[in-house]
Length: 192
Image (cartoon, rainbow, N blue to C red; front, side, top):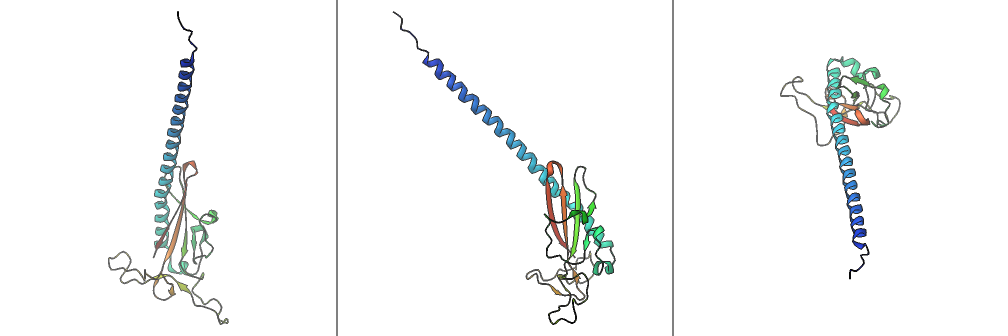
């Protein structure tokens, strides 16, 4: 006489198939997330590399600018400020006051230059005040001319500002790049 089958094996097989289906969906979702993350990292890296266009455009502007315009005149249309601006924050800065550099397609490259001096010009802030200070700049003493192998930097260890004299002031260049998928990068460089 045959015993009646109750179908327990079929129920266990259906539960196992359902669990395998869930594992497959989780794996597909994980691969999709990883691919998206890798793409976003690639776009961010591309924006960092594109910042070189902004740094180079700012350096070229500094090389052709006249010394008097670098000391006394702030040129916001060129992205230049003749003082270091204690409140400068690249994330909250109004980038409408910056210069634009040509860069790769789909990337918006902007830069701003700050002369690393306390005041906007070389004059004493307030000669009548007992707490007035002369212009203070971060400087590099240079022997020879720029571009030669004997050009030397200033005191790198302390990073202290010096009274503005015959030394060349440093300039801080901040480049901002906005690329595809709203990738945004900020890069800063100090030049003299």
